[in-house]
Image 1 (cartoon, rainbow, N blue to C red):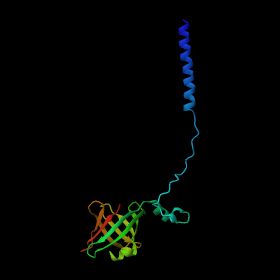
Image 2 (cartoon, one colour; image 1 turned 90 degrees about the horizontal axis):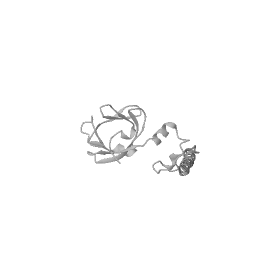
Image 3 (cartoon, rainbow, N blue to C red; image 1 turned 60 degrees about the vertical axis):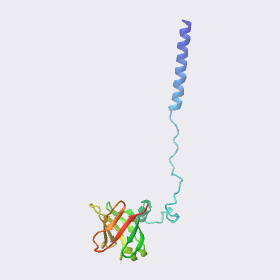
Length: 159
């Protein structure tokens, strides 16, 4: 009987110690305050990192990852780089073509809007809404001129 008492007492003591240990282990802990990740990527130019003086419409452009396209005019043998930027509406995005794109397609440097239609075609227009170019989806990540007779023009998304 004495040995049974020792076994039961040992089991109760071990259970008590285990319960106390689990209570301390699973008890409330202090949660570290959430802080911003200190990593700064080189994808955002240093002049744009401080967006306090930048208009909110431009801040949306900075925060949205742009898509870069090469525009090739095979008839003229000219190429330029354009940027499809931030979302303006559910179908429309900001668009930028540098002045050298005027050599690739007349009026392309005035383009400011990329509108994606339900059929997959794209309309590139200026700030007044005048259509400069209509594109249809080509193979893979490319677009081709749709409504311009004799235009051998293609946009290819760059990685």
